[in-house]
Length: 410
Ligand SMILES: [Zn+2]
Image (tube, rainbow, N blue to C red; front, top):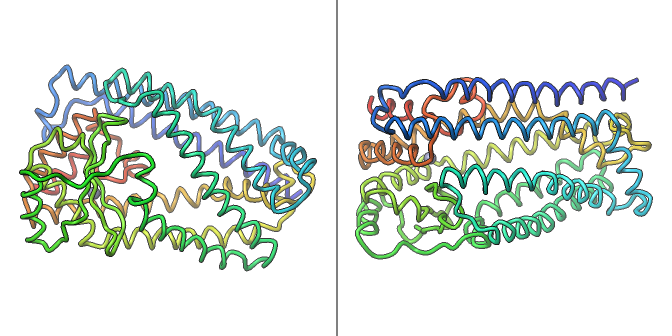
């Protein structure tokens, strides 16, 4: 009886998620068809604007197709009890032990990767290429894939292995112990992202001597930001889209500018972007968002500990016996409304942080070059100038360009 209810709740949640996403995406695509807002006049000429709208539509249609495909597949898998069948098959040659969940999720990972690959190839080598964004060679694409798989195998395997061990060894309180493990992992990933992970994919070089370095140097002396940690990343290896970001904390903090950003922007614009990134550091955004994610992981693990030993959850997925991996998989779906809710809160906080970093750049440097820089970045990336408010509410980690400019001009 209980497993019947859980079964329908699982199907209900994935159907609701799918319907919500498709609705938001539909609204957003329709909203992108509006004329250029008056604040942003001149950002595109007519021909470029049509091109950006076509790009938006094409990406949206493609996402819709791939989301529908995944939804149908997941629905069928739950409806027909395929996860239960997979579990029975895995337990045939790996009777319940530490290894079974690792093999089970390993197979799911490989299957979903194989299914996802044609979609990602089409996205990069057809759509992105058509609009001149893709700079990736097939070789880079496959090496990226190989490296991500190895990282996934190492980190995913270690974390999952630890979780399975703790669940078996400790019982219901495992979540507290695993939370500590995850906290160490998140802090470690934050501290060492630019030194250990990123260099596997990209080359980071210190900013070279010249006008830009002098301008940034002058600015950082004024705001007392140590200059040793500014790097240029070869983003051009994959895409022509420019970007910049801030990473790490304490002594390991770093500002990374993409070479594609430097190429297209003036020294003043780049210094303003740099000032924005310094703003994230000065306003302690990285620390707060890290603490926010760590708290959410705690909540998630606590909720999982309430479900981890319930046999009905495994049965709902078609399992014949209660297993940790089936429960974990079902929990991933049952938790998704909670994660959507906290995702919306997190995105709202992130948008607030962006306004603060913009304000900091305006205060300590100037608003005009930042506005010009953001406009240029937005038109170079063919971004949607008129996203739908509901879509922004759920998905945008940065406020729409128009609102950022309005806030800075106020
Ligand atoms: Zn920012």
